[in-house]
Image 1 (cartoon, rainbow, N blue to C red):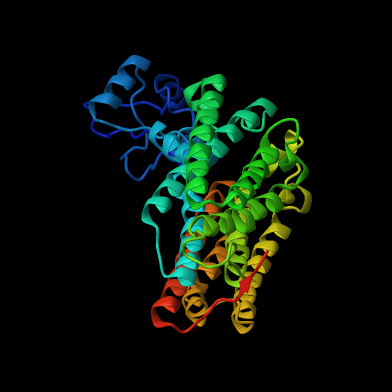
Image 2 (cartoon, rainbow, N blue to C red):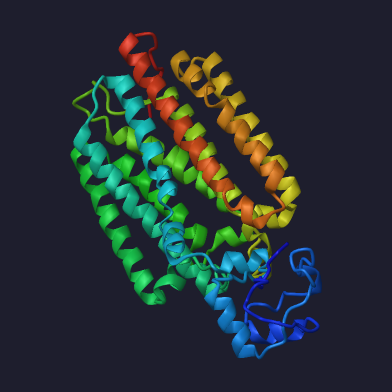
Length: 394
């Protein structure tokens, strides 16, 4: 039973008359859902209560601590999300794994090549990456606010703080600080090409969401995401961890880092793809033709399955081709249950906007664990001396 405004049978009344259900409805502001079938006649000896004024019924309900639960729809319950929950969703803390994973995998690949791990560079790059990811999230909220895509999105930062201009200014400042950190590391490493690759990654983020491009509205967000976080960012971080003092040749790109960057790009793109499931209706209304708007949710759930299978197939193919060490393959294979969990969750809930909202966080879990396993395998290969990466000279 959805909700009952209970009436205690021993309210201190004597003779009772016929049950005035309309009086209870008028007296209790939350009892609009109450009807005759909500009264269990077996609980009351005569199945009736005394007809009294609205004021007395309300007082009695309060005195006996009777709670009245309105029959809220699922949409109403979503609107009643607490402010703390909205802030947590706006911060998107788990999403920042997309900053840590490419850098960690790149640093592990650099360690595999040189046997060195440059802690200070890693920390500066991590902070700078977090600043840039925050710029990406904030500016995305601003421009989606402009188009109306986030009109009903309560966890939008613009809707929470109530200031479009303030959000945009904060986003641009974070981008400036983040890129300044990248410039510093590139200058220390003496590698301008790495900075150019990161600039390409930032440009991908800009044309993804910012006017006049807004390529995400044309369904090109996923290819841009793959390029930005995969080949561009991961390879650039790797180059920044290697200097000319470490190696006797100016460029040390390997098949290992290129292969690892492809895998990182795939898991990152999966997060973006699954984040669209609960936004299909809103995106379609404002003319944002994301892949899921174009192919539908059911077909999208099949794409997720295909993408997960392709990820692990690519892992084994790269291992057979000696592009990745066996240690990375074995450790990444241990994440197969997480990949299967993503597939099962999406297949089961793709039609439910409330539940499918969590799909992107399942993908974040896969992204973080797969990336950690990949990095750990690269480090283990160096420690055990069982793998030598193949160099590519540019």
